[in-house]
Length: 156
Image (cartoon, rainbow, N blue to C red; front, side):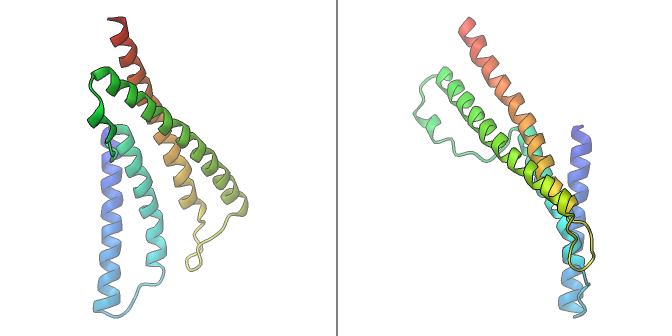
């Protein structure tokens, strides 16, 4: 699964970079912009953003401002802080996922299309819900690990 994710993310970033390169060359060098290229790049770009966030959640490499850890004296305090942080992340993430689900249902019902190429925007909109669901799964796994490590320490 890790290999598939890395290949997918690499492919998406290459596709977006290539599309931007073509856009710059055709628009500014050849002065003949490609109609609909920016619009079509929205799809791989949004999927790249969301799957990149899922990858950071899987690897537990989010950018964090761990200011409170400076003041903590023991390893137990750090574990309690990690459990609280993961619990807050899980709660807020689930709340946002319910909003994303409502938006996905709306997008399915309305079935909007892009203005130039008439590509259904649902395929972009569903990336938000898919990404949040996957992030919440990984957050729940990390939360479970933190809780388990806290209880293993208490059992000693």
